[in-house]
Image 1 (cartoon, rainbow, N blue to C red):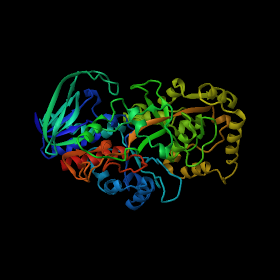
Image 2: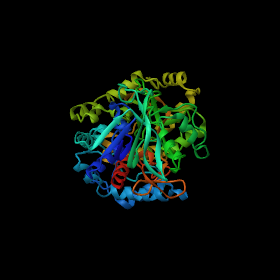
Image 3: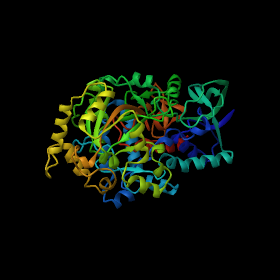
Image 4: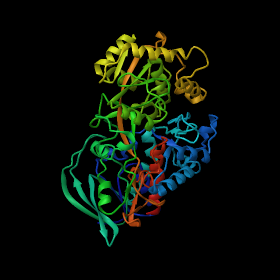
Length: 545
């Protein structure tokens, strides 16, 4: 079998690459090891956030943003400090030019729209040149992950009808075909048909082998987040300490990193494999789809964050401020979980669950449901379901009962007197408009932004205020999610070989390429840069191939 280009992986990056190829008249075979229900990959499960700069949505909210400020935030967060960061740094600059330039206009022209309130993720909280977003930049796609995929899926399926694209599900690549040092195709296995729903594990029964010759191959196979053994093998213990004894998984099991191994076996160069992005606010899904299924809380700034022993975490471990800094702090303490101590008033306003399936109002573009679920007397129905059924929630009317419930499910025994003293110290800071508690300062600063005041930050109140109750404790787990390193590429997405030269015929995009160049985030991400990186790198690789 022969074709112009083979694209490996039917996630967002792969779909964008296919769109660029067929727009230029190329014939494409798209290989996807999962069943048809899983087309779209991890992007389907996402909240649909995109990192964009100086957009109409920002300007309407009074946010002044520009390329220079975004670059300052990105470089301060990335911490590029390795010789192999040459291409990742160039990719970061190129993405920011895209995000501050044609990105919004181009995606809008494809039919994409965004929720009018721009989110403020990864706020940092250090100095101006350090980690974090100086301004809100998280643009949530109207329709969440499925809404982000829709314009590209539509174009790919139309090209399939026109005969330009051949989508082959249940085709798993096991090797790259090499001819005199160049990649000239793929070798793989056809897996048995499987009708499982999206995200559930599919069988690995092999029916036969296949070979496809192609002028170019694009790897868009994702990362390693669903493979806990690989996550632990690549864990940067020198920087973060030992990984926790247990973790929950934020991506389906098929995100296994095996294609990256096949690429390196063919001579491709992987860099920055120790850089990864895992969240510290994971919940065990009470209604799981894949094994060890975890869901992330996207928190506002008001909950008290404690370690497993009940000690309040220091800066930068504030909710929503510094994911990597908090991960390092928790790993240094050697516990498998931490705690939010909060109130019903806070979770109603501030807690969002990551994932398209956890936000039916936004995913379904249902304004009536959105107003009812976001502005009602309770938290959103999916969050209330977690509060009722999830094993990580403790709900109580008194602090004594709350601590008793925490001690039943926690790995350490928490002292009632110690927790009460910390809560009362925090609550005293609310007696006037001054405070030395930087979390209280951050809450007040957040409410100066109209978007947070309306949707994401509760009015400051005492944790033990009966009117804000009941009291709630949430046990939080480390949630595996993204690999920030990947196959090293130039700005066209062409993969480099281990000898330092380009590997002719091979391209990579999305998470397989560290979202560009082999790690364009550096050590830290600013959020919205995962989907944005898939779109930008997929576009570049498709155009170049």
